[in-house]
Amino acid sequence: MSEFRTVAKVGDIPEGQGRSFAVGGTMVGVFLSQGRYLAINDFCPHMGASLADGYVEGDAVSCPWHAWRFSLVDGTWLDNSKSGIRSACYEVRVEGVEIQVRVSAPAASAGADCGGGKT
Image (cartoon, rainbow, N blue to C red; front, side, top):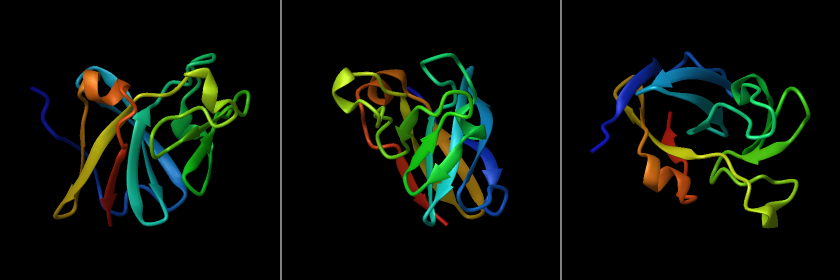
């Protein structure tokens, strides 16, 4: 069973930006969007760019290499949501001042909600 891992402290990730962290062997992009922390797989499924380096607008992030857009809420590829292409998403919580992420492969791949830990 997976467990939550602390990746950063509240205030380490500016609003509208992301940061990349290794969590249990998986690279995870953690974003602060509209006061909520959300986490998706950091690698763009197209060519592997770090999504944490992408442009965040609302609850979407654009890949910095080719501008593919992904939902930070459920990992859906927003440019073609019917394609089935998505980024895995992970549960996020805030405990005190710690931002924590849980990587659980089966649930994360199924399109579960990507967290929503509030500041």
